[in-house]
Structure formats: structure tokens, C-alpha cells
Amino acid sequence: MIKLKIKSGDIVRVIAGDHKGAEGKVLRVYKDKNKAIVEGVNMVSKHTKPSAKSPQGGIVRKEASIQISNISLIDPKTKEATRVGIRVEGDKKVRFAKKSNQVL
Image (cartoon, rainbow, N blue to C red; front, side):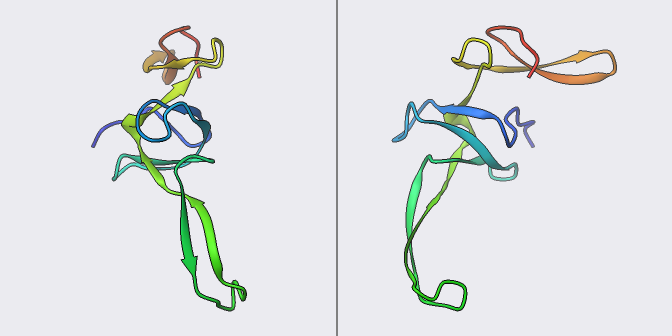
């Protein structure tokens, strides 16, 4: 399994696909599928029947997952898309932005 460098809570930008250029916060990461759910990106409509949970039913819009390779982390210093590296500082591994060399 590949070590994923994007975690939930990160701010990312979509770099490929229909939603290219969109930005959002990562809500959830699926390591086994190499996918992530990004807030406000890749919205899909789901038709629901009336039930006890939603007595009205109707159309519900929610986020669908997007491939990890299609998103890039936003550097907190330069506000641009950047790659992520991992280095050892002391006895801990830390993630850092490759453009600004800043610890994430």
C-alpha cells in the first residue's frame, strides 16, 4: 500500500478532471481506494425515497470521492499547489511543502 501524503483537514486544489481549479477541505480519505472526499467538489445528486429519517424524500446533493492523484495540497505560505515531502526532525517524521520548505 502506498503512503498517502494527504490527510483529512488539509486544504487542497483539484489539478485534473472536470473540477480542475476547485479548492476545498479534505473531509475523508480512503486509503484502500486511493480516494478522498473534498468539501464542495464533485457534487452528485442522489434520489431518495421518503423514510423515517427524511419524510419528504427528494433529491439530495452530496460530495463524491475524487482520486488522490487528481488533487494537490495548497502551500500555506505561497497559497499555490505544491508537492509534499516527508523528513525526519528529531525522532518524528513531519510533512513539509516542497515549494516553501515549510512544515505542515
